Image 1 (cartoon, one colour):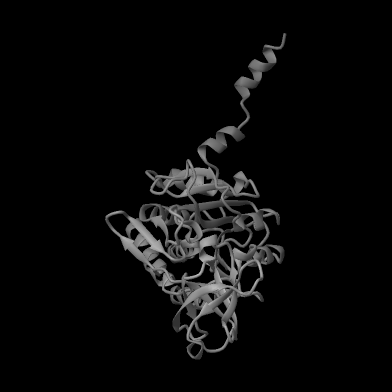
Image 2 (spheres, rainbow, N blue to C red):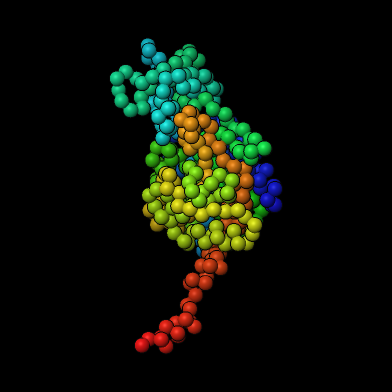
Length: 367
């Protein structure tokens, strides 16, 4: 599959996922979409007891270590929990900015059948501190509670002139769409090792699904893990500069073993605009796997308006660059094509080789 086809497929998946509002603990509609796409491409899936989805494209050698690409299905939002005389009560889920809790913020209630009902934040619930809220909404329309509530922002909008993709939840639907595109490509390209796509739940409230998947050994031991995320822009991780090989996050520095897949893929494809940075704005799912002994790296799309926090202090749609997104898919597909080969980049091989001539000179120069 060529890069243009990969890019088009990735954008199709991203727009499809963007049309499905979800937040932590309310990921089922996103999960249903992912399961349907995997079934359509003939990729086996397993759903663990927590609702994490593991997509599996088997390798040709059972003894070869595979590679797994991990993304989460949720985005920060709210939860409506009870209908009271003064309005519908609820709370925040995940790290939305302070302005997302102010009176007058427009929101959308997502009924259990998927129907959307407009609402607005009236204010805090009583004198309680924290993220407890009262919503104004037509209570006779919202149906059974609890239900998800999301910010009233665009599902998906792509501006060809600026090359920006604006979405309520680029974090982390961009990662999910990328992995679906990689799986689609991997179906056509057998490799010694297996290629996995892991789609997790409740990342925004503490990496919950990823931590449980890692602790339970959902992925085989020795699998190289690539966390596929969006992350807030930083110096050296700029929008439009290419996807970022993520050497770590706010909590963990990742290892070179898994990063060699991305380095080797970059070298083999050529002419890819790629950045490399420790993305310290937040903690990603790579930390959960690294801390459970998996060789881990990450790939991040530089993200504007992270968690819908506009640079002007208003609530905004998140945005990523089309070129970053499509280049990232190409890079990940290149890494998937190396599954089970234990690749080494030219630089890595050079450092690993014993410097015999220089060694002799050191020995000969001892005074």
